[in-house]
Length: 94
Image (cartoon, rainbow, N blue to C red; front, side, top):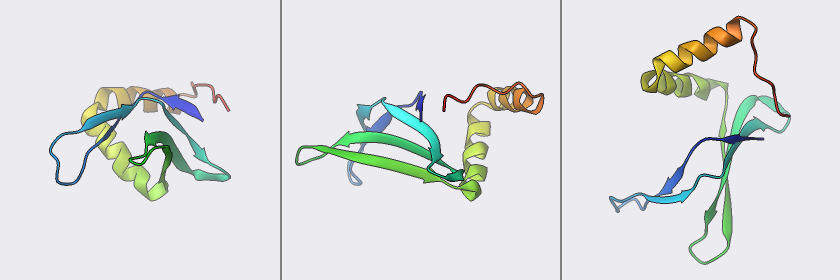
């Protein structure tokens, strides 16, 4: 798992305010399912303790994820894809 630069916020369905929870977020492949991305973080539980959260995105979900990334920063997505297509892969930390 690799640290992901991201922030997690929590809100109730009937509440209009989002509250910061954590920026300790990791991303990697889910176990031996190399076709899925797994994003993980921890949330404080209402009754005390900690809740582990795992968000798994399969290949079908990649379409929506990439589309939203493209809307947010098309120049960044294009640069990263060009880098990959030209064989300049970034190291896989494991």
